[in-house]
Length: 164
Image 1 (tube, rainbow, N blue to C red):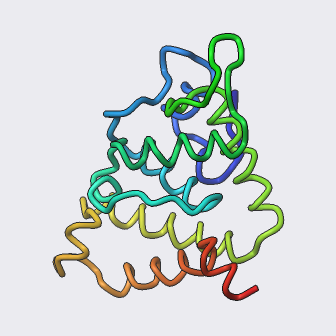
Image 2 (cartoon, helix red, strand yellow; image 1 turned 60 degrees about the vertical axis):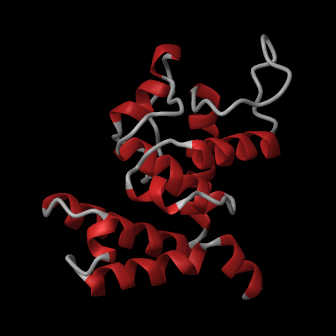
């Protein structure tokens, strides 16, 4: 399956999870693909994911809870063997997140601005081996981090509800 959203497309781990049971993303996973899942959840829902998991791109307990809440809200359950949602990011979850992100891209200009800022930040950080922790510690580039934070606030569900 080729993923279509700007956030997910081209990510080998997410594309593999979308087609192969053995590539599902589980608690304990770490990497850019986890960060993209966390970002997607923050775009489409209002999860509470602890800072340490966000900083280290790690799939820990709060990310698992956010995945489970997302799947519960949308009734993403493999009824052939489940009676309630789990916290595994597999075929159905990747497809649902990708579809929601793609719809958002088509209809929401603020989302596209935020996504562009996220892409710029990620590219910049990767080129310079920066982490969110190094930015927060003052080692990195505060103006870029502030630009990213401002863009992310624009599309965060709580902000959008307040602004009507």
